[in-house]
Image 1: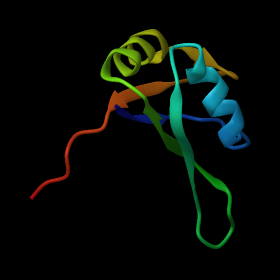
Image 2 (image 1 turned 45 degrees about the vertical axis):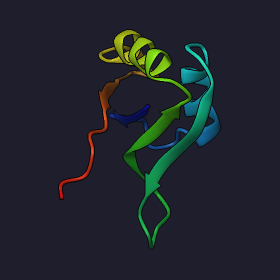
Image 3 (image 1 turned 135 degrees about the vertical axis):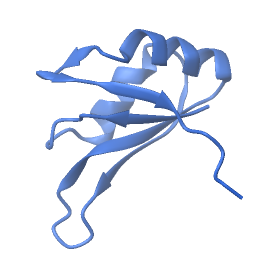
Image 4 (image 1 turned 180 degrees about the vertical axis):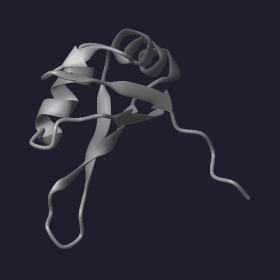
Length: 82
């Protein structure tokens, strides 16, 4: 299950993001979106959990949770429009 994670602090690393979600299951991939030129975080990223159940558990627990003085926004990523 792929999740959008918003309101990340600018200096969060992918390893830190992965560790936050690892408590809820196996993290397949963690990716923070950065500016192409400056490489600075755009304050959001994506997490891919190994199962739907783990993703739902993580989303339920972390959406609206304060992490590093920032309120996380966690949502399921839908299928792309056709």
